[in-house]
Image 1: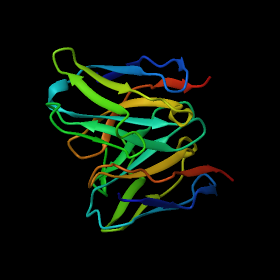
Image 2 (image 1 turned 180 degrees about the vertical axis):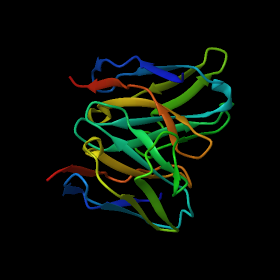
Image 3 (image 1 turned 120 degrees about the horizontal axis):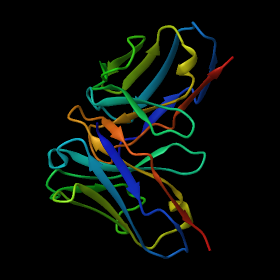
Image 4 (image 1 turned 135 degrees about the horizontal axis):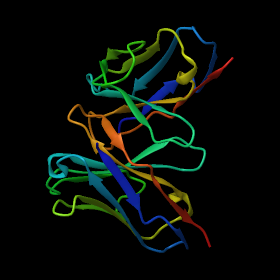
Length: 118
Length: 107
């Protein structure tokens, strides 16, 4: 069974830094592109970032470019999101999602909540 | 960046109704269009990928169509479990933008 489990969400002050993790199981992690998607309270889905299977290619939403860094460790079946210079509008539930071969995100974690507040 | 616009933003319907949600891309995305369903407190679920391919386990009452810039999600006969929020997403290029969502509730 495919499972994605996010962790690392906390309440943090503006301008702080945080690293989210996502641990994958039930599939060959290194074969898949991975994504981060977030959802602010009561709002819609916002795509954040993706990383290729080997970590060589990354993309970011304009809203996080230069502040967030996606990475992965295929030896640990883990995906990461380093978040720097956090702002109040980064407050959201952060999901990791597998990039299916079809192009859609076919498996999602349950999300980890990041709250940026003083 | 490619902008995705869904309509309507909300929709009220009854069990057994046929409903259609539309999604328009700001430029051609070929058939690289996905649809998701999200229920309150749950992660999104992939329903349709590649504009019209049904994800495994998704009932056949869900159908996707379109190409280029204009796409539709049709639910042929609404069931009680279908009341949720639906999102389109383009996977043609990064950033992989989502539509703003369509909330489908019970009339």
